[in-house]
Length: 248
Ligand code: SF4
Ligand code: F3S
Ligand code: FES
Image 1: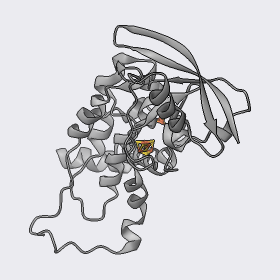
Image 2: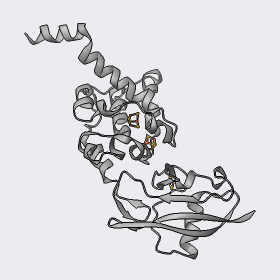
Image 3: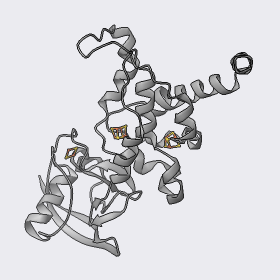
Image 4: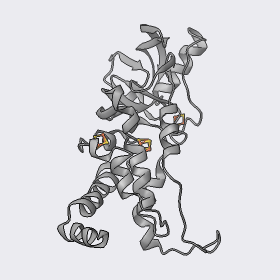
């Protein structure tokens, strides 16, 4: 079936912009990105929208639809009510470059702040041996496609620009958890995740988990276990006593 869909698309740049209404032809089975491509082809050749794989795997086409962070290529038109006007806006947490394209370099800066995988001394690449049981926990986190929808939705930075220097965001707190749970990684990241990457600012709202297109249980499987490790280290009376005695 062919029908006419109504979109309100944010058009503008870093200096400001506005929502512009368009009526676009749509066909059964299409996703929102299909309609934006048809809009580009028929009415707005200068509309800026980032995409690459059109298969939910590159993480490029992140935007907000009716205020909810989503992948444009994985959001079927059929999830909306017939006749509903879709409002499509850029990710709110990052600076706009133009139209639906934002500057996500905040995330690359945060990625660089996390020390990389650190194998034990004397173990060369090719000599790593791990059992599946040991890698199971952190393997879930490797599904991340770096769409940054979780980073966009987390209120710690979405509503508070001033928190950005002190908060890595759920994607990169999860990266710390992945390395911390890695059976061969020998670096100690527990103090840094709290002090440098801002884990304490996460108050477990679970919004990051709700929007993850890969279905990764960011909060329950990465952030809460890291909070437990911080608590064990800092507040366990036996650990505290041991550290106090060893410092003497
Ligand atoms: Fe995207 Fe999920 Fe990775 Fe966050 S954890 S960047 S929401 S895939
Ligand atoms: Fe933010 Fe996720 Fe914590 S949305 S507050 S990082 S549970
Ligand atoms: Fe690659 Fe949407 S275009 S995830």
